[in-house]
Length: 258
Image (cartoon, rainbow, N blue to C red; front, side):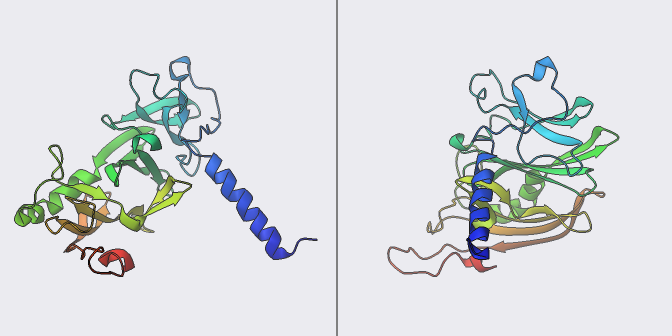
């Protein structure tokens, strides 16, 4: 007879295995409440993107069809009756893990606002806040763009070399990303508080590797007021490079304990 601990361990292993299978990259397709129209036959609901009342979700090409389509678009859609509410721009980004992409969707409790993170290799590429009203998108704001404007003066004062020819600096998730079987399933640092504000805690850097003595890195913390569409609190902290571990041992990244 199994003990309570053995049953608990068995349940955890089964639950973990199930969670690993129910991901976009594993080919999992959540069942919609009603069939999609023919023009969306190659699309599916992205796992873990339903609003809390299951009225809305995000759509993206099926994993099996992703690289066979001429273009891949992301939509937020009402599910019953089905209609596309809005396309969400993702540029040339792929949300597939093998293309260094990922995504995270978070909804406010009342389903009126969503956060959608379009992930890249090191961290968020774009973070959209999407306000819904009467079944349409009332406002769509790129939070990464407004954060960039907040930290840009500090970057310019640093006189650091840009990340590459396209970006002055990027967003680095560091330890704020939760990973399940190589699949990012959640990301701290862009979430709703109990009052409905968006709490932001992110890192911007010209080099995600911590040992480059010339790299620029800051931690940005802010509170975004959704109704007023502005920050009501901000904080920017410069993070110095770490000593090279090959020469000097270190206990870890400076902000890992924050």
